[in-house]
Length: 153
Image (cartoon, rainbow, N blue to C red; front, side, top):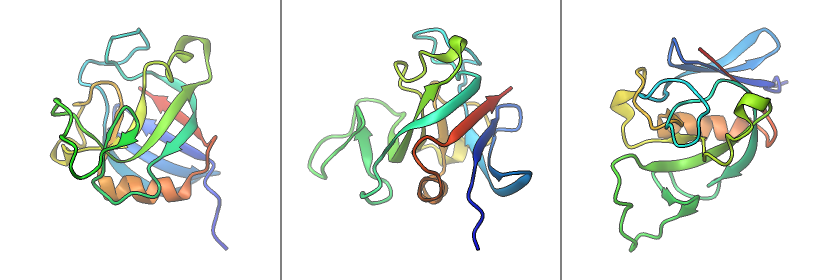
């Protein structure tokens, strides 16, 4: 019988994401949080702290490496966005559950795949939590909509 995951726990200090059920860590993945630090200020490009939930899961039917722009998958003939910080493979869109991070969804803070897998393990994002694409796909399949997420310093 498989244990149902109950929590995604992200440690900014360790640049790790743990999938936890009860007291058991089921999986642990390297991540990259914001290179601009921690905070919830609008436009800050910082990673927010506190309690969240997965408010939306996007991309489950698309191949690994699919590029998303404004949460919409690009077709193969569309040009990539004019940024080097691509959102790839899947999106877990976070919603803040506390007063200080209630703007998280409006800030478009996600757990998403990246084209900068070599930077995982160090702060390098623009506020989101970046993951290796294959790790994100595995996580995406295991967590339900509404799953609890905790981001701690």
